[in-house]
Length: 309
Image (cartoon, rainbow, N blue to C red; front, side, top):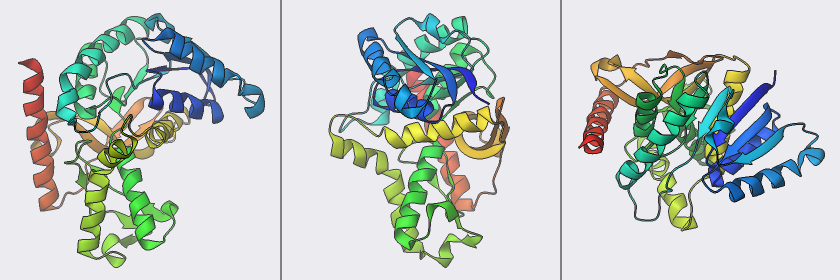
């Protein structure tokens, strides 16, 4: 089944890459690509529409700056925000992007109150919380890409290290979408534990590479950040919603005192279906993993306090 309409707010590198993937995969009849710079959004839309004949796709893309264009969207993906630059921490982005997401969320609530909202903007977990507060939507319908991207990065590194196909790897990354993410050694290759293929010190090195991958890409690009993998991670979520596949995907979601850690947003494996998050799963945590998740909860609350001060 093809959706009637998907909107993408933010026509930068991730937003335009996402629109391209939606078009290629024929996931929606219409795409509204919205950006503060309307000429830019229209230019990207024109370029994408010119590929429809070649791709044999009837999906039509419109470029707009007016938020009323999100009306009747089944899914709205928010990529808008200030990008992270070399030397900039995620905390540096907090107040700037919180203002942007607060404004965008109010427009979504006004024009498309029945939509599912997927956040990509960083610092992601905090932006999910800001969007929840400003839309008033159910936490099943507002969540972030988060750990799905980090898990894909981990799977890539495991595959390169072992030579095993990425299709046979089950990566497990939880916690905040930041350098403090929880990269679990409970990840598997086939039905085997990771330790069957990679020694402890080897996995620790992969863990560090996963945590620092975003910064590595920013440092290489100098002007910009990751675009293709984040877009692919969002498409996986959109497909799970569209097909009601009940697929387990790690996303940034609101926890309501699961693990007895209070209320905060973080990456957890969730069952994704037509309603968005159908169920938040609670994997068994090793003692050191529970400690790291607890530290993430505390860091989240400290950052939230900075935002409200």
